[in-house]
Length: 420
Image 1: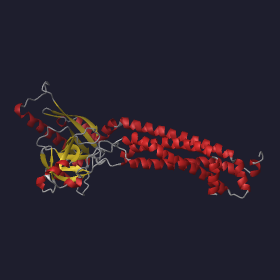
Image 2: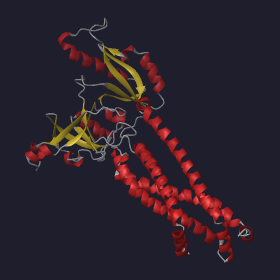
Image 3: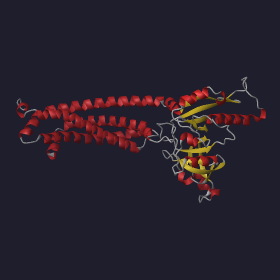
Image 4: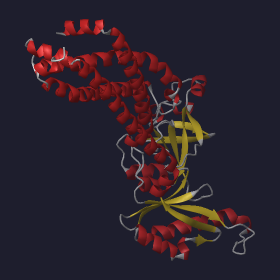
């Protein structure tokens, strides 16, 4: 049966070659669409590295000297500002609705800022690396500064089994953290190479206390290298940008009311806390364009799938209708309905196989020049999306062939060949 089918397909090569080329063009279009959606959505299925639920952020502002409310502390202005911030966070921590509160500088997700730096192994630690080799190898990452309580605010996750209490204690003792490297960006030194070691960063020496899960900058982004978490010393808070607060579940409205009605939680000295927003709202605002683009892409993709399905169904419906008499003759010669159905399905899948080969040969160079240049994409994404495309097209062909084939097989042979 298979040999007879292949022989028949060779005799009809003129019609089949155009169908194969058409299917190849359709498969390539669907492949591009599938890969684009894969690149856009792959981050949505990866850990963010922090728990944004019930986390609220307060921005830190200063009263300018020109304001009548400005308090002139003279030479002690820096210490007065630090005292004011300590008083503000102390009042916030006393709230019955607050689980934890912490200072941060580029510490939170949903901020696309990137303050990169590198750490190198310190030779005095007893590293076997030479000075020259040490200068060549480094771990690069986005620096995030936070006070120790941020461990509980964001619920940071140790990748070596340490508890949150352990992480908080390590930060309080002046240790720094590194993270797993997303995208293997600048991975001359891996996190395991520096964990527990003394390292140099920005001209200072630190001890790497642990490896934690990378805090990604958004739900969509995947590749942003590593991350270096450094502690903010609460004895001097001039580098703090905001205060992050983890609230007890279901108490957000009560805390907002308390904050708005308590001046001591809003202003101390020349420091003001304002713009109380949830981390989820920050995410929605920062990712609104991405969300809109994703919804539009999904809608256009579904429309393309419907158009492709209708086109494939029309093509094979026409081919099967042309072969109604051939189907009737095969039934008269003893072929079962299941044999005829398998033959029709096999023909469609063989044509799809040739189309997939053309798709792979022609589409891969185009993908490398376009979508695969995205930092979130890999060759594996292209292979997976290509395989998914072929599988989807195979299902579409089977469904689109099943409807007209079922109708053609039910026609009585005498009726089918009465005009022959």
